[in-house]
Length: 235
RNA sequence: ACUUCGACAUUU
Image 1 (cartoon, rainbow, N blue to C red):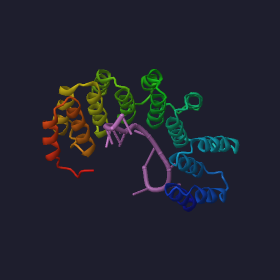
Image 2: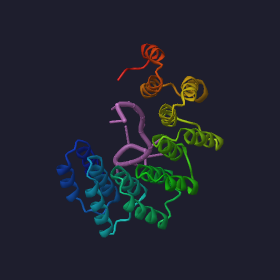
Image 3: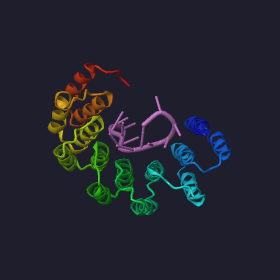
Image 4: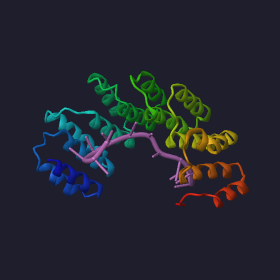
């Protein structure tokens, strides 16, 4: 069965859902990993509606959804901004007691954020039994993408206060937030100190963000100089 | 979390 699951995953990644589904259909359909794999394949190919149907079928077959199932289905709902269905899944998660999972929390926060519901996204983090850099970053990214620059930095400070260090994704969201909110000095400060302060060497994505930030406020010369001095592989 | 599974910037 491990072989079948591996093949479903492989064909799903190659966008060959026909083959993936044929292999899945050949199994006994009683293995949660097989279901997770086929649902994930449909999600990655952009067929969220099919993923939701399979999720219903899975429950109909009496297979118990696990942490990975919920994370996968939430990703699918997030990409479609399916807020009502997302709420229902959230209720189901609470009823099976999966709110200890940082992975489920991240996926819930991301789902609410992509639905434009920052209020519920914040509530998920506040009520999480466990928080890690991933669930914090999900919320920080949410505020960053909605243009709340000061709130983004405030949350990053709160996270640090809990003893959780910023990682490359958190820093990327912070730089993006500073760029969109016109917080030039703050953005430059994070960029210049991220290596010594947080032990994160700027990647091509971080460079892209800081160059964008400088460009937006017309500091094109500095922006250009920075481009010439990028030590990482350009994309 | 290498059989499945979270947060990912720019042009947008």
